[in-house]
Image: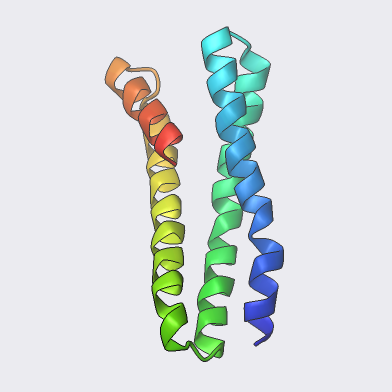
Length: 115
């Protein structure tokens, strides 16, 4: 039960980093402000890496609670969105190596916005 109570406290930190990172990076790239774009890249990377322990804590929290029938659809969609977010930002991390190519820049920004 400890992890189920800890997860909601931790989850807001990586979410805030990811959202602010995406906004900073898009604004910085499209307005030509390199320092803002760099701050966005930092926030996205730090948000991705800090989301991994939060996912583990959330998984341990799910294992420690009893899930009732009416709660199962919400919980399964919550888990789906959590893993989708982590995998999309994993794609952002991998595509960041190809940002100097045209196709890489397009794919990178697509994954960034989709995340």
